[in-house]
Length: 197
Length: 197
DNA sequence: GTCTATAAGAGGATAGAC
DNA sequence: GTCTATCCTCTTATAGAC
Image (tube, rainbow over all chains, first blue to last red; front, side, top):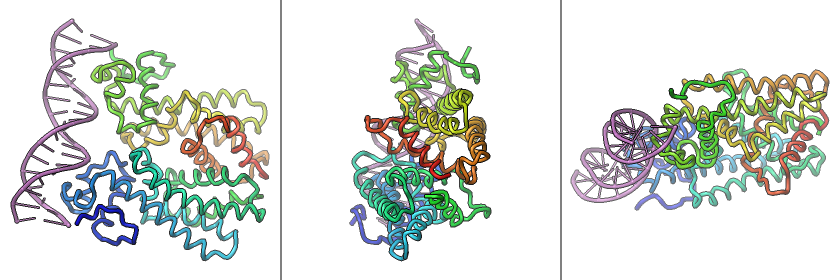
Protein backbone atom coordinates (compact mmCIF):
# COMPACT_ATOMS: atom_id res chain seq x y z
CA UNK A 1 0.00 0.00 0.00
CA UNK A 2 1.23 3.44 -0.83
CA UNK A 3 2.13 5.85 1.91
CA UNK A 4 0.46 8.73 0.18
CA UNK A 5 -2.37 9.18 2.67
CA UNK A 6 -2.21 11.95 5.17
CA UNK A 7 -0.65 10.82 8.38
CA UNK A 8 -1.12 12.85 11.50
CA UNK A 9 0.70 10.61 13.92
CA UNK A 10 4.39 10.93 14.48
CA UNK A 11 5.61 9.53 11.25
CA UNK A 12 9.04 8.31 12.01
CA UNK A 13 8.32 6.26 8.88
CA UNK A 14 11.95 6.52 8.15
CA UNK A 15 12.03 6.61 4.38
CA UNK A 16 9.34 9.22 3.95
CA UNK A 17 10.64 11.37 6.78
CA UNK A 18 14.19 11.09 5.53
CA UNK A 19 12.98 12.41 2.20
CA UNK A 20 11.12 15.30 3.77
CA UNK A 21 14.16 16.35 5.73
CA UNK A 22 16.43 16.17 2.71
CA UNK A 23 13.89 18.08 0.66
CA UNK A 24 13.69 20.80 3.30
CA UNK A 25 17.40 21.49 2.96
CA UNK A 26 17.36 21.43 -0.83
CA UNK A 27 14.28 23.63 -1.07
CA UNK A 28 15.79 26.09 1.36
CA UNK A 29 19.13 26.24 -0.40
CA UNK A 30 18.07 26.16 -4.04
CA UNK A 31 14.41 27.00 -3.93
CA UNK A 32 11.58 24.61 -4.69
CA UNK A 33 11.36 25.25 -8.43
CA UNK A 34 15.06 24.88 -8.99
CA UNK A 35 15.22 21.60 -7.13
CA UNK A 36 14.51 18.69 -9.45
CA UNK A 37 13.14 15.30 -8.54
CA UNK A 38 16.53 13.99 -9.61
CA UNK A 39 18.18 16.21 -6.98
CA UNK A 40 15.78 14.86 -4.39
CA UNK A 41 16.48 11.28 -5.38
CA UNK A 42 20.23 11.82 -5.23
CA UNK A 43 19.99 13.28 -1.75
CA UNK A 44 18.53 10.07 -0.35
CA UNK A 45 20.09 7.56 -2.70
CA UNK A 46 17.05 6.84 -4.83
CA UNK A 47 16.31 7.06 -8.52
CA UNK A 48 13.95 9.88 -9.35
CA UNK A 49 11.17 7.53 -10.34
CA UNK A 50 11.22 5.85 -6.95
CA UNK A 51 10.17 9.04 -5.21
CA UNK A 52 6.73 8.65 -6.67
CA UNK A 53 6.09 5.59 -4.64
CA UNK A 54 6.25 7.77 -1.52
CA UNK A 55 4.67 10.93 -2.89
CA UNK A 56 2.17 11.36 -5.69
CA UNK A 57 3.69 14.64 -6.90
CA UNK A 58 6.64 16.88 -6.25
CA UNK A 59 4.32 19.44 -4.75
CA UNK A 60 3.16 16.92 -2.17
CA UNK A 61 6.75 16.88 -0.92
CA UNK A 62 6.73 20.65 -0.62
CA UNK A 63 3.54 20.59 1.39
CA UNK A 64 4.91 17.88 3.66
CA UNK A 65 8.04 19.95 4.28
CA UNK A 66 6.01 23.01 5.18
CA UNK A 67 3.65 21.07 7.41
CA UNK A 68 6.61 19.60 9.26
CA UNK A 69 8.22 23.02 9.66
CA UNK A 70 5.22 24.68 11.18
CA UNK A 71 3.90 21.81 13.30
CA UNK A 72 7.30 21.00 14.80
CA UNK A 73 7.70 24.64 15.76
CA UNK A 74 4.19 24.86 17.15
CA UNK A 75 4.69 21.77 19.27
CA UNK A 76 7.96 23.05 20.59
CA UNK A 77 6.41 26.40 21.46
CA UNK A 78 3.45 24.79 23.19
CA UNK A 79 5.79 22.68 25.31
CA UNK A 80 7.97 25.62 26.24
CA UNK A 81 5.00 27.82 27.09
CA UNK A 82 3.55 25.12 29.30
CA UNK A 83 6.77 25.10 31.27
CA UNK A 84 6.95 28.89 31.66
CA UNK A 85 6.06 30.33 35.04
CA UNK A 86 5.30 33.95 34.22
CA UNK A 87 4.39 36.13 31.28
CA UNK A 88 7.88 37.46 30.88
CA UNK A 89 9.13 33.91 30.43
CA UNK A 90 6.41 33.22 27.90
CA UNK A 91 7.41 36.24 25.87
CA UNK A 92 10.97 35.00 25.91
CA UNK A 93 9.79 31.60 24.74
CA UNK A 94 8.20 33.14 21.65
CA UNK A 95 11.52 34.55 20.54
CA UNK A 96 13.70 31.64 21.54
CA UNK A 97 11.61 28.89 20.01
CA UNK A 98 11.04 30.78 16.79
CA UNK A 99 14.68 31.64 16.25
CA UNK A 100 15.93 28.20 17.20
CA UNK A 101 13.52 26.63 14.77
CA UNK A 102 14.43 29.05 12.02
CA UNK A 103 18.17 29.34 12.52
CA UNK A 104 18.98 26.09 14.27
CA UNK A 105 20.94 23.52 12.39
CA UNK A 106 18.23 20.90 12.22
CA UNK A 107 15.28 22.59 10.67
CA UNK A 108 15.22 24.38 7.30
CA UNK A 109 11.58 23.30 6.99
CA UNK A 110 10.18 26.42 8.62
CA UNK A 111 12.19 28.62 6.28
CA UNK A 112 10.66 26.81 3.32
CA UNK A 113 7.23 27.52 4.75
CA UNK A 114 8.05 31.22 4.83
CA UNK A 115 9.68 31.62 1.46
CA UNK A 116 8.10 29.13 -0.93
CA UNK A 117 4.47 29.96 -0.33
CA UNK A 118 3.88 30.97 -3.94
CA UNK A 119 4.66 27.48 -5.18
CA UNK A 120 1.86 25.92 -3.14
CA UNK A 121 -1.23 25.14 -5.19
CA UNK A 122 -4.48 26.75 -4.15
CA UNK A 123 -5.91 23.40 -3.16
CA UNK A 124 -3.13 22.78 -0.65
CA UNK A 125 -3.11 26.23 0.92
CA UNK A 126 -6.07 25.90 3.30
CA UNK A 127 -4.56 22.99 5.20
CA UNK A 128 -1.31 24.85 5.71
CA UNK A 129 -3.08 28.04 6.70
CA UNK A 130 -4.80 26.16 9.50
CA UNK A 131 -1.41 25.08 10.82
CA UNK A 132 0.01 28.56 10.52
CA UNK A 133 -2.97 30.09 12.30
CA UNK A 134 -2.56 27.64 15.14
CA UNK A 135 1.01 28.83 15.60
CA UNK A 136 0.12 32.48 15.42
CA UNK A 137 -2.71 31.95 17.90
CA UNK A 138 -0.13 30.88 20.47
CA UNK A 139 1.72 34.12 19.80
CA UNK A 140 -1.42 36.17 20.04
CA UNK A 141 -2.38 34.60 23.34
CA UNK A 142 0.93 35.45 24.96
CA UNK A 143 0.96 38.98 23.57
CA UNK A 144 -2.55 39.61 24.84
CA UNK A 145 -1.60 38.27 28.23
CA UNK A 146 1.42 40.56 28.29
CA UNK A 147 -0.73 43.51 27.28
CA UNK A 148 -3.21 42.74 30.05
CA UNK A 149 -0.35 42.83 32.53
CA UNK A 150 0.97 46.06 31.12
CA UNK A 151 4.22 44.55 29.89
CA UNK A 152 3.44 45.83 26.40
CA UNK A 153 1.20 48.68 25.45
CA UNK A 154 0.62 48.40 21.70
CA UNK A 155 -2.00 46.97 19.45
CA UNK A 156 -1.07 43.34 19.88
CA UNK A 157 -2.19 42.34 16.40
CA UNK A 158 0.11 44.79 14.67
CA UNK A 159 2.83 43.98 17.16
CA UNK A 160 2.54 40.27 16.38
CA UNK A 161 2.94 40.97 12.69
CA UNK A 162 5.91 43.27 13.05
CA UNK A 163 7.65 40.92 15.45
CA UNK A 164 7.14 37.88 13.26
CA UNK A 165 8.41 39.89 10.29
CA UNK A 166 11.55 40.84 12.18
CA UNK A 167 12.14 37.26 13.21
CA UNK A 168 11.50 35.82 9.75
CA UNK A 169 13.97 38.23 8.23
CA UNK A 170 16.81 37.02 10.44
CA UNK A 171 17.44 34.17 8.02
CA UNK A 172 18.59 36.78 5.52
CA UNK A 173 21.37 38.18 7.64
CA UNK A 174 22.10 36.03 10.68
CA UNK A 175 25.20 33.87 10.42
CA UNK A 176 26.11 31.49 13.18
CA UNK A 177 29.77 32.36 13.24
CA UNK A 178 30.32 32.46 16.97
CA UNK A 179 29.88 36.21 17.41
CA UNK A 180 26.25 36.01 18.42
CA UNK A 181 24.45 32.85 19.45
CA UNK A 182 20.83 32.25 18.54
CA UNK A 183 19.90 32.51 22.22
CA UNK A 184 21.69 35.84 22.54
CA UNK A 185 19.94 37.16 19.46
CA UNK A 186 16.59 36.10 20.90
CA UNK A 187 17.34 38.01 24.09
CA UNK A 188 18.38 41.11 22.19
CA UNK A 189 15.25 41.09 20.08
CA UNK A 190 13.11 40.54 23.15
CA UNK A 191 14.78 43.48 24.85
CA UNK A 192 14.10 45.63 21.79
CA UNK A 193 10.42 44.82 22.21
CA UNK A 194 10.11 45.16 25.97
CA UNK A 195 12.20 48.26 26.37
CA UNK A 196 10.00 50.78 28.02
CA UNK A 197 6.71 49.17 27.22
CA UNK B 1 22.73 47.83 -31.90
CA UNK B 2 21.51 45.77 -29.03
CA UNK B 3 20.36 47.44 -25.85
CA UNK B 4 21.97 44.83 -23.67
CA UNK B 5 24.62 47.07 -22.18
CA UNK B 6 24.17 48.41 -18.71
CA UNK B 7 22.48 51.76 -18.69
CA UNK B 8 22.67 53.93 -15.65
CA UNK B 9 20.80 56.93 -16.97
CA UNK B 10 17.07 57.13 -16.71
CA UNK B 11 16.16 54.61 -19.30
CA UNK B 12 12.72 55.60 -20.40
CA UNK B 13 13.77 53.44 -23.38
CA UNK B 14 10.18 52.55 -23.69
CA UNK B 15 10.31 48.98 -24.93
CA UNK B 16 12.90 47.75 -22.53
CA UNK B 17 11.36 49.58 -19.59
CA UNK B 18 7.89 48.37 -20.47
CA UNK B 19 9.23 44.85 -20.36
CA UNK B 20 10.90 45.34 -17.01
CA UNK B 21 7.71 46.69 -15.49
CA UNK B 22 5.61 43.85 -16.87
CA UNK B 23 8.19 41.34 -15.67
CA UNK B 24 8.13 42.85 -12.19
CA UNK B 25 4.42 42.16 -11.86
CA UNK B 26 4.66 38.65 -13.27
CA UNK B 27 7.65 37.72 -11.13
CA UNK B 28 5.92 39.05 -8.05
CA UNK B 29 2.67 37.24 -8.72
CA UNK B 30 3.94 33.92 -10.04
CA UNK B 31 7.56 33.85 -9.01
CA UNK B 32 10.52 34.09 -11.34
CA UNK B 33 10.91 30.39 -12.09
CA UNK B 34 7.25 29.87 -12.83
CA UNK B 35 7.11 32.77 -15.23
CA UNK B 36 8.08 31.68 -18.74
CA UNK B 37 9.51 33.82 -21.49
CA UNK B 38 6.21 33.22 -23.28
CA UNK B 39 4.36 34.80 -20.37
CA UNK B 40 6.68 37.77 -20.59
CA UNK B 41 6.18 38.10 -24.31
CA UNK B 42 2.41 37.91 -23.97
CA UNK B 43 2.40 40.63 -21.35
CA UNK B 44 3.93 43.12 -23.76
CA UNK B 45 2.60 41.78 -27.05
CA UNK B 46 5.79 40.15 -28.30
CA UNK B 47 6.70 36.65 -29.34
CA UNK B 48 8.98 34.95 -26.87
CA UNK B 49 11.91 34.95 -29.26
CA UNK B 50 11.76 38.72 -29.63
CA UNK B 51 12.59 39.24 -25.99
CA UNK B 52 16.11 38.17 -26.67
CA UNK B 53 16.76 41.20 -28.77
CA UNK B 54 16.33 43.29 -25.62
CA UNK B 55 17.86 40.95 -23.06
CA UNK B 56 20.48 38.29 -23.50
CA UNK B 57 18.88 35.91 -20.98
CA UNK B 58 15.82 35.60 -18.81
CA UNK B 59 17.96 36.16 -15.78
CA UNK B 60 19.08 39.52 -17.14
CA UNK B 61 15.44 40.56 -16.94
CA UNK B 62 15.28 39.49 -13.32
CA UNK B 63 18.36 41.49 -12.48
CA UNK B 64 16.98 44.53 -14.28
CA UNK B 65 13.74 44.26 -12.31
CA UNK B 66 15.61 44.08 -9.03
CA UNK B 67 17.91 46.94 -9.92
CA UNK B 68 14.91 49.07 -10.78
CA UNK B 69 13.15 48.18 -7.55
CA UNK B 70 16.00 49.12 -5.29
CA UNK B 71 17.30 52.16 -7.17
CA UNK B 72 13.87 53.72 -7.58
CA UNK B 73 13.27 53.31 -3.86
CA UNK B 74 16.68 54.67 -2.97
CA UNK B 75 16.20 57.73 -5.15
CA UNK B 76 12.80 58.37 -3.67
CA UNK B 77 14.17 58.06 -0.15
CA UNK B 78 17.09 60.36 -0.88
CA UNK B 79 14.72 63.00 -2.26
CA UNK B 80 12.38 62.73 0.70
CA UNK B 81 15.20 62.86 3.22
CA UNK B 82 16.63 65.94 1.55
CA UNK B 83 13.31 67.68 2.03
CA UNK B 84 12.96 66.69 5.69
CA UNK B 85 13.59 69.36 8.30
CA UNK B 86 14.25 67.36 11.43
CA UNK B 87 15.24 63.87 12.48
CA UNK B 88 11.71 62.91 13.40
CA UNK B 89 10.65 63.69 9.83
CA UNK B 90 13.53 61.68 8.45
CA UNK B 91 12.51 58.69 10.53
CA UNK B 92 9.01 59.02 9.17
CA UNK B 93 10.40 59.18 5.65
CA UNK B 94 12.10 55.80 6.11
CA UNK B 95 8.78 54.13 6.85
CA UNK B 96 6.67 56.01 4.35
CA UNK B 97 8.95 55.63 1.37
CA UNK B 98 9.63 51.98 2.04
CA UNK B 99 5.99 51.02 2.44
CA UNK B 100 4.83 53.08 -0.49
CA UNK B 101 7.45 51.47 -2.67
CA UNK B 102 6.61 47.99 -1.43
CA UNK B 103 2.83 48.22 -1.20
CA UNK B 104 2.06 50.98 -3.66
CA UNK B 105 0.34 50.04 -6.85
CA UNK B 106 3.19 50.94 -9.16
CA UNK B 107 6.10 48.98 -7.92
CA UNK B 108 6.26 45.21 -7.50
CA UNK B 109 9.93 45.45 -8.42
CA UNK B 110 11.11 45.92 -4.85
CA UNK B 111 9.15 42.88 -3.75
CA UNK B 112 10.91 40.82 -6.39
CA UNK B 113 14.23 42.03 -5.01
CA UNK B 114 13.26 40.75 -1.58
CA UNK B 115 11.80 37.38 -2.49
CA UNK B 116 13.61 36.11 -5.58
CA UNK B 117 17.15 36.51 -4.38
CA UNK B 118 17.88 32.80 -4.69
CA UNK B 119 17.32 32.87 -8.43
CA UNK B 120 20.06 35.41 -9.00
CA UNK B 121 23.29 33.90 -10.26
CA UNK B 122 26.41 34.42 -8.22
CA UNK B 123 27.91 36.61 -10.91
CA UNK B 124 25.03 39.06 -10.77
CA UNK B 125 24.79 39.30 -6.99
CA UNK B 126 27.63 41.74 -6.27
CA UNK B 127 26.13 44.48 -8.41
CA UNK B 128 22.79 44.19 -6.68
CA UNK B 129 24.37 44.04 -3.26
CA UNK B 130 26.02 47.38 -3.93
CA UNK B 131 22.63 48.88 -4.67
CA UNK B 132 21.06 47.33 -1.60
CA UNK B 133 23.89 48.55 0.62
CA UNK B 134 23.43 52.05 -0.69
CA UNK B 135 19.80 51.93 0.36
CA UNK B 136 20.54 50.51 3.77
CA UNK B 137 23.24 53.12 4.30
CA UNK B 138 20.57 55.81 4.05
CA UNK B 139 18.64 53.98 6.75
CA UNK B 140 21.67 53.59 8.93
CA UNK B 141 22.49 57.28 8.67
CA UNK B 142 19.07 58.35 9.83
CA UNK B 143 18.97 55.82 12.66
CA UNK B 144 22.38 56.91 13.88
CA UNK B 145 21.28 60.52 13.78
CA UNK B 146 18.18 59.65 15.75
CA UNK B 147 20.24 57.75 18.30
CA UNK B 148 22.59 60.71 18.69
CA UNK B 149 19.60 62.89 19.47
CA UNK B 150 18.21 60.38 21.95
CA UNK B 151 15.12 59.63 19.90
CA UNK B 152 16.05 55.96 19.93
CA UNK B 153 18.24 54.14 22.39
CA UNK B 154 19.02 50.77 20.86
CA UNK B 155 21.84 49.28 18.88
CA UNK B 156 21.03 50.92 15.55
CA UNK B 157 22.39 48.04 13.48
CA UNK B 158 20.10 45.50 15.03
CA UNK B 159 17.27 47.99 14.98
CA UNK B 160 17.76 48.57 11.27
CA UNK B 161 17.54 44.87 10.59
CA UNK B 162 14.47 44.29 12.70
CA UNK B 163 12.68 47.28 11.24
CA UNK B 164 13.44 46.31 7.66
CA UNK B 165 12.27 42.79 8.44
CA UNK B 166 8.98 44.11 9.81
CA UNK B 167 8.48 46.30 6.78
CA UNK B 168 9.38 43.60 4.26
CA UNK B 169 6.90 41.24 5.85
CA UNK B 170 3.98 43.60 5.33
CA UNK B 171 3.60 42.31 1.78
CA UNK B 172 2.50 39.03 3.28
CA UNK B 173 -0.46 40.41 5.18
CA UNK B 174 -1.28 43.99 4.18
CA UNK B 175 -4.28 44.38 1.89
CA UNK B 176 -5.22 47.77 0.58
CA UNK B 177 -8.92 47.37 1.21
CA UNK B 178 -9.70 50.80 2.58
CA UNK B 179 -9.41 49.91 6.25
CA UNK B 180 -5.87 51.08 6.63
CA UNK B 181 -3.97 53.22 4.15
CA UNK B 182 -0.29 52.72 3.49
CA UNK B 183 0.42 56.10 5.06
CA UNK B 184 -1.52 55.16 8.17
CA UNK B 185 0.34 51.88 8.43
CA UNK B 186 3.64 53.74 8.14
CA UNK B 187 2.64 56.02 11.00
CA UNK B 188 1.59 53.10 13.16
CA UNK B 189 4.82 51.27 12.60
CA UNK B 190 6.81 54.41 13.27
CA UNK B 191 4.92 54.90 16.53
CA UNK B 192 5.68 51.33 17.49
CA UNK B 193 9.37 52.13 17.11
CA UNK B 194 9.45 55.52 18.77
CA UNK B 195 7.25 54.70 21.69
CA UNK B 196 9.27 55.43 24.74
CA UNK B 197 12.60 55.42 23.07
C1' DG C 1 12.78 45.43 -34.08
C1' DT C 2 9.79 41.62 -34.59
C1' DC C 3 8.37 37.37 -36.70
C1' DT C 4 8.38 32.16 -37.54
C1' DA C 5 10.37 27.99 -36.77
C1' DT C 6 12.97 25.11 -34.31
C1' DA C 7 16.99 23.40 -31.85
C1' DA C 8 18.48 21.23 -27.63
C1' DG C 9 17.68 19.91 -23.39
C1' DA C 10 15.50 19.34 -18.84
C1' DG C 11 11.46 18.72 -16.38
C1' DG C 12 7.74 15.75 -13.85
C1' DA C 13 5.68 11.59 -14.02
C1' DT C 14 4.49 6.57 -15.53
C1' DA C 15 4.99 1.42 -16.65
C1' DG C 16 6.57 -2.77 -15.82
C1' DA C 17 10.49 -5.73 -14.34
C1' DC C 18 12.66 -7.31 -10.29
C1' DG D 1 10.18 -0.68 -2.34
C1' DT D 2 13.34 0.36 -5.91
C1' DC D 3 15.17 0.10 -10.60
C1' DT D 4 15.39 0.97 -15.60
C1' DA D 5 13.60 2.97 -19.37
C1' DT D 6 11.05 6.25 -21.38
C1' DC D 7 7.03 9.33 -22.50
C1' DC D 8 5.57 13.74 -23.24
C1' DT D 9 5.59 18.30 -22.35
C1' DC D 10 7.54 22.57 -21.54
C1' DT D 11 11.58 25.45 -21.34
C1' DT D 12 15.23 28.89 -22.80
C1' DA D 13 17.50 30.40 -26.51
C1' DT D 14 19.01 30.74 -31.54
C1' DA D 15 18.75 31.41 -36.78
C1' DG D 16 17.37 33.64 -40.45
C1' DA D 17 13.48 35.84 -42.97
C1' DC D 18 10.96 40.15 -43.18
